[in-house]
Amino acid sequence: MLRAEQGSDWAMAFGATCDRCGGDLLGSDVRYTVNLDIAQAFDPMEVAPAEQRREMRGELEAAIRTLEALPASEVQRLADESYASFRFDLCPGCAAALRDEAKACFRGRQTPRPPQAGETAN
Ligand SMILES: [Zn+2]
Image (cartoon, rainbow, N blue to C red; front, side, top):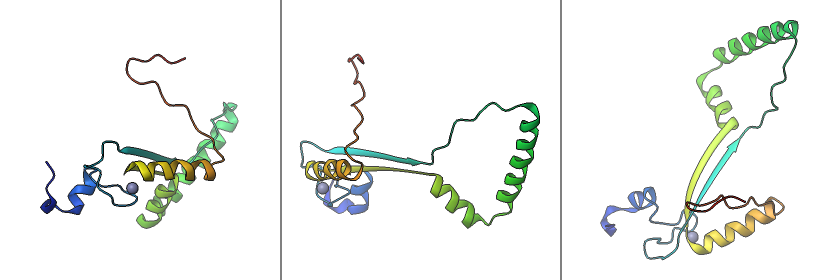
């Protein structure tokens, strides 16, 4: 049971407050979660002839040496640029606002809801 004296950090860590407006989620019958993964996309690898693979190996080894020589802060910056993952808890009002913002921002492209337990995919 959440008590007020447990503090806002505790409440935020356990999804007791909306991560957008800070509203109380424990008093709400409905709350939402948002999972956001931002990952750098790559083209699929192509099968290359043996000679080209040897050249690629040299390029890869040079790239690895370059990365190993970078300062830790630069390695972290590159890692942050290539992948970031977020999880948010939202109240119904903020979930509705985020849906509208996502539709406007990403031209309305929406993926279908994945099948839930007991349902079959069509
Ligand atoms: Zn909210």
